[in-house]
Length: 440
Image (cartoon, rainbow, N blue to C red; front, top):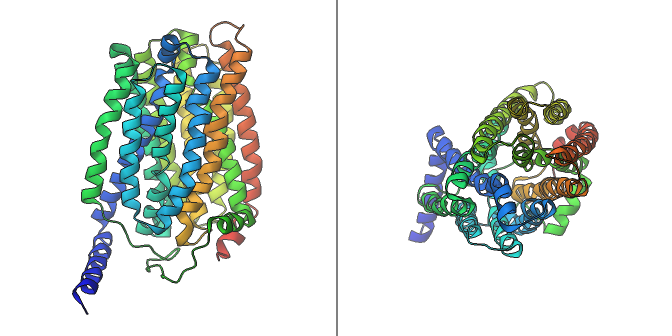
């Protein structure tokens, strides 16, 4: 054995030994959680600041909806798929670190913009960077943790959405009120670049494993081209249904998350810091409880019937619809915020289920790409169309006083999103078992 071959073997052994240690598995999951948390700090920061931006730069609700929703989502999903394909073949840790540095820098640049076009371009840069965060990280998690612990691990990772939301709302609201929205972008976006270097220095790329086992993936495993992969995923009815169901659910949830701060500011005349603190805590903590609790509960439920991967989300979103309508008809701002926290628990609990289910119906060589395709639907339908639809409806009803037009727009979007999602979750329950038992 020559020295180069020996080094490769030694490195592979060291990586395997490291990832066999629970403490190191937890550390890597924690680092990926931090990255995902910053992903949503930077993504959602604009939501708490958009009323100040509107007043300063004169944007309409439609422009705000496009900037925080459709345009962002379009670039996020468009770059997410090729980056995910690269992640299925290359070093996922390096991709995540580079992406983190890019989106953090572009967030800081948002603070220097002076027009809608400039802000839109900066937000597109944030979207391109963030496209390289989730699919490679989820692929790593599925290689690190066995199937029986996968939904729980994914739920911990996806809770970063709501840790990020708390930080973005609370610190964005406080900094924005005291120092202005420009300073908030710069202060929150810039320092995040440091985490990219820590990730590179302390996390090693895990070996890829066979689906549902701890064995290393064979180098002979077929790696289909992207067009072939799309055909494979399309033929799997479960994937098709959960992608549409997830997109419709996100359509409803982003209609609330992206516009609730503006609604509270307009309807109840609260300050930005008040909305940031209370909305951030209620929604953020609700999301953490829902995401982690949902993942842990599903890991237990699937031991009885794997269809709970989709039955559980179906039940959750129906209750979320009821709570959301009550929230938007409350005359007390703090009751509305509390109900917002409850609706977030319900709206957030479904994501670990369908991510785990999607990884259970594809082989290990295509997980990152399958995740990116799933995220395409989740984000182009949800993040892209949800906030933009609310903005369009709100502008068309702008003759109404206070936050009335915005409230009506949000209610309409929630109803459309949840009822559409319920249909597709129900359909996926009929095909899930077959698709999980017939992976090719």
